[in-house]
Image 1 (cartoon, rainbow, N blue to C red):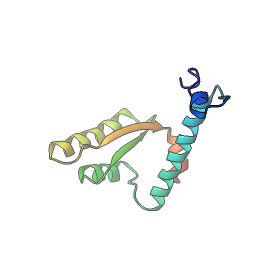
Image 2: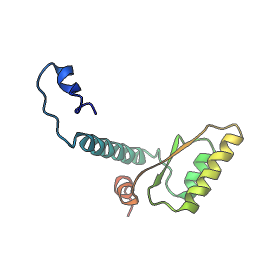
Image 3: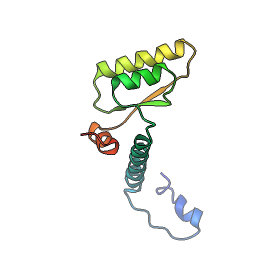
Length: 113
């Protein structure tokens, strides 16, 4: 939208050529950065992997968020969602869940097979 409205040229007070795929480029860069940070967090031991460990972290109020693979099974997502609701019901923190990356992307970033 900013490119279509010529906002970059106005902001820089100069003629600016904006690639038509700028949004896709930014999306790709942000995804790579986020996956890289997840890899570092795993190496630091700050990520719970596997349904049992994730559920335990959620129920213990230790999880900041839950990240499901985009193709995660409905049953697995449901089980973690139940744990998230139970945690809130018992006075714990609300833990948000996201589906941002594929299983292959997460496996590569987190060192899985």
